[in-house]
Structures are given as structure tokens and as C-alpha cells.
Length: 154
Image 1 (cartoon, helix red, strand yellow):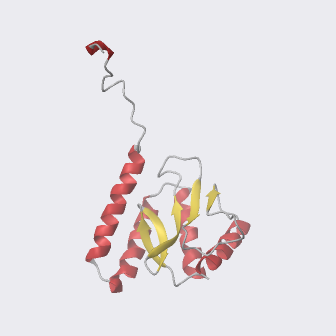
Image 2: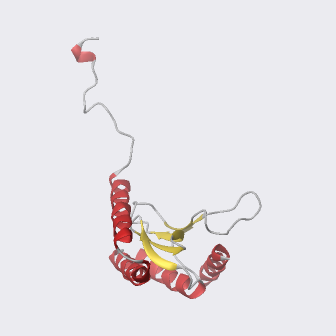
Image 3: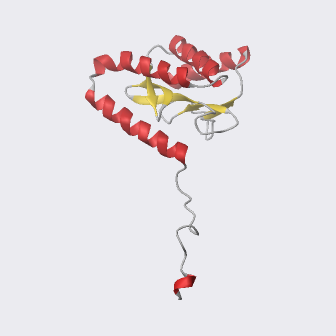
């Protein structure tokens, strides 16, 4: 192989994490560090203010949806503790994130997402949804989210 046949740095393409994904991973590392520094007593208060701060940073209409979801989760499942998760509003039970809101702005997608992790009790047969695309929240959507959140923590 001649020197001219070798791939150059500019010819290589990296298909790993994009800038937004790397930023989310850095945020998660900071969250873990902060969690280890504070006690469980202050976690709920600190988590709440961190979630509200993340929501306040979101552009509309994501911010409005996140505020609505935050209110729904707090009212429907007060046993869940608000906390940031990869820089997103999340809601945890026994330290494990049950559900989260992902702003469309965070990863530059065309819709926001309400997601549920494996600790959520949404099991329904052999297949069930764990993430829901959101472009806006109607009254019917809010009712469905209340049902999902209640089922997730049951």
C-alpha cells in the first residue's frame, strides 16, 4: 500500500455519538456525581429544582408540554421523585427512573417523547409501548398520561 492509498483523517467518518448525545452523557455523569454528594433527604428538594430549571431552559412548545407533564406526574404519582436524567426531566421510584420527558429540542427531533424505563409496570402481554411521541397535549392525551403514570408505578 502506498502512502497515497492510506485513508486520511478527513476521509474517515466517525459514526459514534453526535454532539447532543455526548452532551447528554456528560450531564448524566454530573448528575451521578451530584447524587453521590448529597444525602437522600435533600435529593427530592434538589431534584425538583433541577427538573424545574431544565424545563425553564426549554423553548416553547416543549416547555409548555414539560410543565404539563411535570404537573401530571406529581399529581398522579406523588411517590415519584423528580430528578434530572441525562439532562432531561425524569421521575424516579427507589432511585430508578420510571419515566422521563425528552424535549424535541434536546436531540433536534421533530417531536418530544414521554418515555418509560423497564422499571415501569406497563407490561401488557408480550409487547407494549415504552415511548410516546408528543407534538402537543390534548385533554385526551393528558388523561392517557395519567393512566400510564399510575400504571407505571403500580
